Length: 408
Image 1 (cartoon, rainbow, N blue to C red):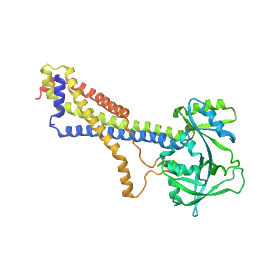
Image 2: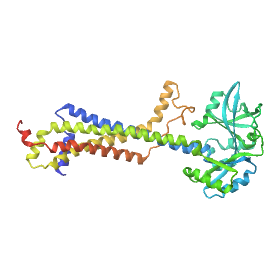
Image 3: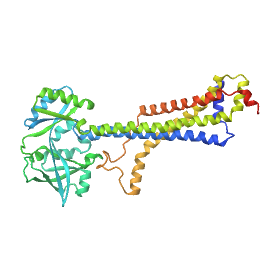
Image 4: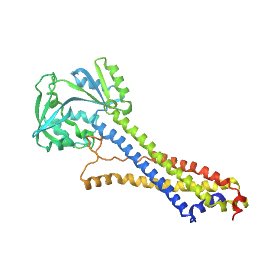
């Protein structure tokens, strides 16, 4: 082992004469552990929100949709035209209305979707939230309704009970259209959709429209979520001027951008905490240099070069950074794994729900640990720790043996 590395390692593990130096060394390591750990946890939560947006919300909300002015007469013909496009994997019809669901004097606004269940399974992952029996019943029986969990809770309605659906007259009339539906299933996605979504079959919803033979639009499943806007535009060019379209970037793009912006801002703030913790190494090493001036002078008289002296203290500071970063990564991984159970425990203890679907897009903290983020955080912390060692090491190398040993 080279002499600077050997002495640097000995200095790191040796007991301190000055307990204040030991305290600052512990503070430096603790700061790195906390900073790195919290940064990894926050990034894991943000990655989880990103994943759940794509895998849960977009599993039920159309990735893209195509509409015809005045409504679509022959949706099967349009379906065939759309599926000829190479980047459109599937298309399915839907009718969309806004209305009120009423039960025992209570009313809640909903966005009502009428779907063809067999076709819908080709464009969404609804089977993950509704079992096969419920999908079959929705297909074969009219006036069956699926409601989001939050709506059902506020209404106090249970599966099998009857609710009233009120839809404003689409022709601008005063009298609304009213129908009675049996609650087939309560939909629990643990997302904002639980707060607004109602689903029935196509025929049951279409009768609330001025022209029950027409559908509102066609849901699309595309081969790349982030190219949905371009894919829709190319499809509209092929269909002609009477058609228009939208993608999930229009309906949920702001939420996606907000998640990514929050991730960047929080990562920046947490990185500053890591930087502050890393640069605590500066004050620690400066005090170590003052404490070890006699040793430095003796090493210089034995022939150690200024480069050797610098290397000794750079090794010591870097080792502090390595210890803090490794412990921080372990702390961050453990915290990421237990943050969901901890949140549930606090909710049970305080009898409350911290994340509500009418405020937040999800009702729980999703976690997705990314090896790439962990590597980036660890490398950044190590680099900051290394840079923090340069100035104290340079100061140590400038120590003059004669001036120090004169008073020894």
